[in-house]
Amino acid sequence: MRTFLQMLALFCVSIFVTLPASAGEWQEGAPSSTGLAFAASALLGDEIYVAGGAGISTPQSSFEAYDTIGDIWRSLPALPMGVQQAALATVNGRLYLSGGYLAQSNGPDNASFWVFDPSVGFWVQGPDMPAPRAWHKMTGVNGRLYVIGGVGSHAERIFVFDPVSDSWETLAVSFPAARAALALVVHNGNILAIGGRLTNGAPTPRVDILDLEANVWHRGPALPEPRASLGAAVFESQVHVAGGEQVSPPRTFDTHYVLNDAGTSWETSTPLNTPRHGMTMAATTDSLFVIGGATGPGVFTVFTVSDLVSIYKP
Image 1 (cartoon, one colour):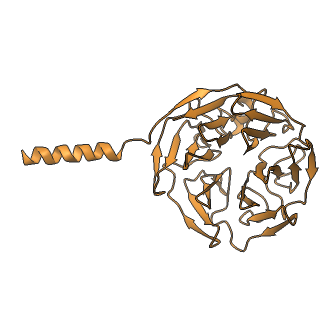
Image 2: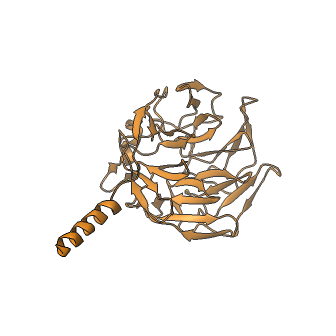
Image 3: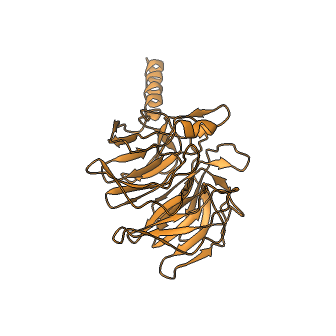
């Protein structure tokens, strides 16, 4: 009898530790007017702003806002140029667009920086980044913008923009594992750099955490599997990661992971309805949004761009 009870206890424990994160469901919202892959996005108020993206022949200059409450899209003044794999972030009610590939790009040669004030309604050129950057990420925290990762000269360097002085600086600390096609979120006052594509082209499960107070990096829990061109957002105080791709063999993913409350491991949650990569991801107080992307990996991206808006509710 004792042996049976011990086996039963072990069985119950094994079930407990393998349970997925509390799962909600994905619903479909109003699709965007065009397919959006490798677009830049940022949440401002109740709207998700989406800029540029990959076109079949040239990068797009479209600029739209998705109303997360009304589930509707509205068009905004076009970007000054078509751009893909750029980065968009917000600070103090303004949107900032950095870098990316232009139609005439010969590699990652774009250091441009643009500012959009929704109350004014047009783009203004700001000071260029210290160096060109594409396929990077940018996030606003503590009133400043941080540019991390991507491809370009000295891609391990971290650029910081101060809107008050209207100037850039380069942090003394470098990105410990330079990579592109990563995801970036701010959680508990730190910046998490999640997954991405290493300089040899391979996807990685690596997670690095920048402690902004100490100005040092330390390793976070790796993703369960390598991912590039994935999406991430903080929803209900937890970090969510969804989708992504690998090139060899070519594949897109529908996986959805959530960082546990202790910040020590990733749990599996409800997968996306449609596998894709290169999408945008944002969260409001009650919903998580995945917009656009492409269902085909690698060279198939521009032929499989998606207009889907997927909404996750607990």
